[in-house]
Amino acid sequence: MINLNVKYLEKNINTKKVFEDYKGNVSKYSNLIDEKKIKGAEMLGWLDYPKEISKDLIQEIEGYAKKFRSKNIKNILVISIGGSYTALRAAVDMCIPPYNRDVNIYYVPGISSNYIYSLKQKLEKEDFSIIVISKSGGTIEPAISLRIFYELLIKKYGVEESKNRVVAITSETKGSLIKIAKKYNWKTFFIPEDIGGRFSALCPVGLVPMAMLGLDIKNIIKGALKARKDTSNKTIEKNTAYQYAVLRHYFYSKLRKKIEVFGSYDEENFYFIEHLKQLFGESEGKNHKGLFPTIARYTTDLHSIGQFLQDGSPIFFETLLIVKNANKDLKFKKLFDDLDNLDYVIQKTVGEINNIACKSTMEAHLLDGGSSTIQIVVEKIDEETFGYLYYWFSKSVTMSALLLNQNPFDQPGVEAYKKRMIDNIKKK
Image (cartoon, rainbow, N blue to C red):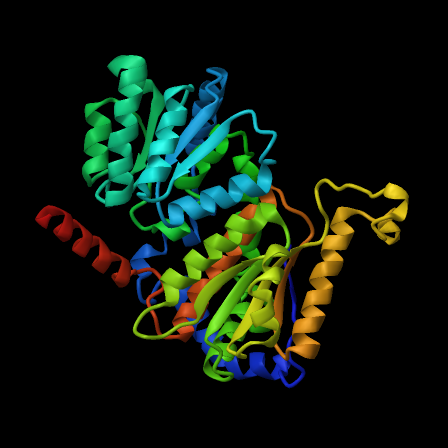
């Protein structure tokens, strides 16, 4: 389902030779991944989860979602942070048009006081339900938001009705959130202990809210299963996920690139590239190593950082998520008596012009700016494609981190800020 297009790499890059040079390491690490003998192997639960997820759990999720949707509650508030937030939002934005949803979804991914206050004011006037996602319940950002919005639920609906408006997705055995959920009799779904946040969208963390919003979670799993099969090949010549990992490492270690710019020309894919920023940044940025991941929202950012990408320091390469066929499109007709000098767009579509903008920019960046672009190309966007992309990138980042001799699954920097924040709050 993915075509890895390397047409827009600098001419001196011989991908065939690069892949051949990395062949031994890829084979070694591929075996270690499959044997679960890598650093952080205890967090490899996502690797086989699409195959092992039980039919009973899928039926339970779908049943709960159907029951929720029958209540005609028009607003869902998702309280989460990090990987359990970005990937969920990516799936929703990719698969459901933002302005024609029968259920609205709002997120609290941080602790901005103005944002939370404004959202609270809105929900004071509207019907809503809460999904809280936290493995431990101890992460301070979602814990604070849960206090604020559950208090609002009780004020609006009372204690008895409020318990029917919360679903907690958390650890089954430990942490404060499961204790709270049991005490207040909330509906619960459980996060496998061997799956971390940025790899969790294909378990209840993502599947429950996706189903509640009307996404076809069976097709999401179907896409992930296809990606699992396609990325199980240990030879680099037949594994595009590993090819991408190798190219990233080559740019970093051999060409001394410092920055990877993830970009998309489709607004609905913006949060997927946000997910990639999260995935690669948190998985690889350790021990003073790794590419700095950033994002570009095209074509908008062509009018801002596009200037730097064209003419600035040659310290980056780009990775673009390309969708060949728009799900919906609009064709231009004759208008304004050509006073805007745009009649040359007649009979073309918005999607065609967007694709031309993408092609033209890549040509300019390569031919005039001397910079490389890797294209990740898919035919269309739907639930199956999301599941495929999500698993494919999870497999790729695992190989990529191992090539850097990193543990792909820990996040010591995140834990450091959490501890200092809690200590400083207690001191204040």
